[in-house]
Image 1 (cartoon, rainbow, N blue to C red):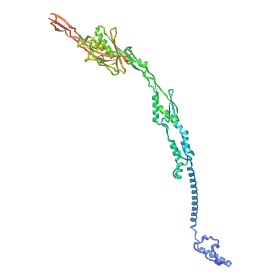
Image 2 (cartoon, rainbow, N blue to C red; image 1 turned 180 degrees about the vertical axis):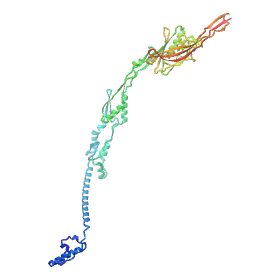
Image 3 (tube, rainbow, N blue to C red; image 1 turned 90 degrees about the horizontal axis):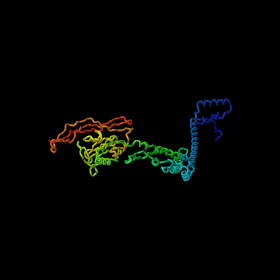
Image 4 (tube, helix red, strand yellow; image 1 turned 60 degrees about the horizontal axis):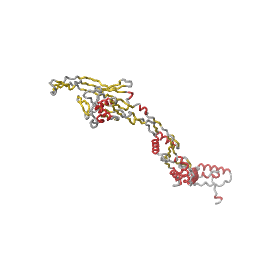
Length: 516
C-alpha cells in the first residue's frame, strides 16, 4: 500500500475511538490541508455537519459478552475448587477405610475400640469388660447361713461377641462411599451397644421360691393330740413360733442388686407367733360336764348290765359333726355278751328281761350330752317315770326300736368317759372344748300336768279262793313334763333357756283280781 493510499478517519483525527464506528461502514477519505486557516475552519465545519447528519450507533453486545466471560471464568474456578474438594474427600474416605484395626470413632458401650484388632479386642472385652456383668453374683445371708447364686446360674446372656463382629465388619464391603458411610454415618464415628440379659426372671423367681421354702419354718400351733382315758388328761402338741421370708420383697431386692453389680444380700426372716400357746389351749379344754345317777337298790344283775354298757361307751371319741348312737355303740344286749336278766319297764309294766338297767346309762349319758351343748337327735321317755332321774329327763332305749342319739356341734373332738364306783354312782363325763366365757349348762325338767288314775279295774280270777281280792298292779298317776336346757354365765346367772324334750307318762288304774 502506498502512502497516498493510507487514509485516516475524521474521528481518528479528532481522537475518537474506533468502537464508535458503524460496523461495515468505512470512514470518509480526506486530503491533507494546505495549511491555511480558512481551509481548517472549513474542514472542521464540514466535520460537524457530517457528524450531525450521520450519528454513530452504541455497542449493545459488549456488556453481555463481558458478563458471559466472567461467568465462564467463575464456573471454571468453581469446577477447579470442587475437584479439589472431591479429591480431599476421596483421600479422607480412603484413609478412613484402610485402617487395619477397628475404624476410628468406633465406640462400643461407651468404650472407644479404635485401632484394636478384632481378635485382640475380643479377648480384651471378654476378660476386662464383660466379666463385670457375667461374673455378677449374690451371696444371700439367711439365719447365719450363706447361699450363693451367679448371673450364669440365672441365665445370663450377652451379644458382645456378635456386636464386636458387627462393628468390625462395618465398612469392609461395598463401595468406598458405602464403606465410609457405614463407619461414619453421624459424622462422629460408629456407636454400638451390647445387649445383655443379666438374669432370666423365671430362673430368679425359681431360685427365690426355693430359698424361701428352704428357710421357712411353719408356726406350730398348740393342738390336742389325744386324750388319756385312764388319767383323764389331754395330750398336746407344743406350740412354737414360725419364720417366713417375704418372697416378693426378696425377689425385688435380688433383682436390684444384680442390676447394680451384685453383692451380699441379708435376708430378713419374719417371726410368726402361734395364735395360741399350749398353756392357753390347755385352759380352754377339759371336762365340759358330767352327769351322775345313783345305782342304789340295783340288783347284782342290774349292776352288771350297767357296767357292761359303761365299758362299751367308755373311750368313745366323738368328732366334730359326728352323731353318737347308743345302740350302735353298745350293741345288742344278749346273754352271749354277758348281759343278765333284770328289771325293765315295758309298755307301762314292770317286767324282767336281758339287759335290764342299761336305760340308766343311756339316761345319764343323755343328760351329760345336753349339758355339753350337744344337739339332741333322738330321745324317748320311759312308759313309767324312773326313780333315778326327774320326770322328763330320762332316755330309754330298746334294741331295734328306740335309740338315744346326740351330735357333737363343737369344733373339737369330744371324749366320753363312763364308769361306776364303789359308792354305787354312775358317772358319764364329756371332755373337750369348754364352753366360751365360763358358760355352764344345766338340764331342768318341769312337770306340766298330772293325770289321775281312773277307777280300779276288777278282773275275775276263778283260780283264787272264793271271796278273795288281789291287787295285781297299783294305780299309777300319769304326768306330762318338759325338759329345758338352761345356760348360765360365769357368775351363775341364767342367760337363756331352750326346750329340749316333752314327755308323757300314762296313768293307769289299779288292777284287782277277785273270785266270788
